[in-house]
Length: 148
Image 1: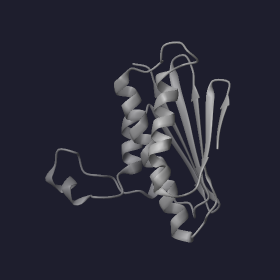
Image 2: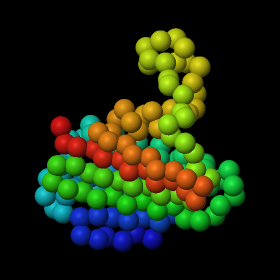
Image 3: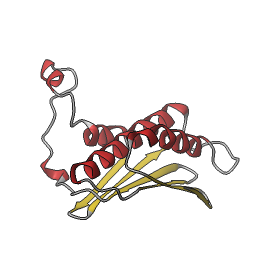
């Protein structure tokens, strides 16, 4: 279900990977257009936004899958004059974002040993602000991308 609300779009999707492309497309389109005006983001920043949102939604799908939760995942994209904010809310078991291990620098050979677990680090690196609020009843990820 999609609802256009002012300068925002809300999506409520089943926790299955088949909906990832839809989320990327809708968020990318919302960030690329601002109510008929030009986008607050250049195409490179829209690509960053699509990538971090994809990571957040993938993590939400996996978190709910761990406990067999079939609750829908909520995605809200709000476009302002100089930034875009996307929230992803799941009903998974939650986690402590401060307990995530520090990753080696991207240019070191040790980094090649990390095939997964890069999502939150990627969100923090590519977003201007990445807030993760998590508890036993779910997780909310709020991503902010500002214009360059």
